[in-house]
Image (tube, rainbow, N blue to C red; front, side, top):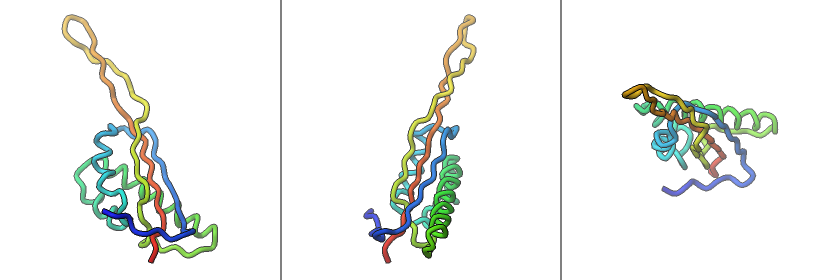
Length: 127
């Protein structure tokens, strides 16, 4: 799928959610579906997704849209939220929580609970 053409000098905004208690592998399954889409289409897809990661990504996307609207107000430019496109969406690995669970014969086995950092950048698409 080709990205829509971006408006030159258009508003861009980003949002980051750090240390989300979900593994990056599971988060990437959802983020790959919305990368390059228009914001309204991505929100509809996230709303009806059964994945737990979709809720966290939806929060981050709504934050990026709010940041774009705020920067447009600050710069006295008009911004239509319907023209925003997700230009960059990445999930990186966060710090691992290391825990132990009991095992046979008095031993302990490690449990690694993974966390994620989600970053979403939105920009205005050309008309």
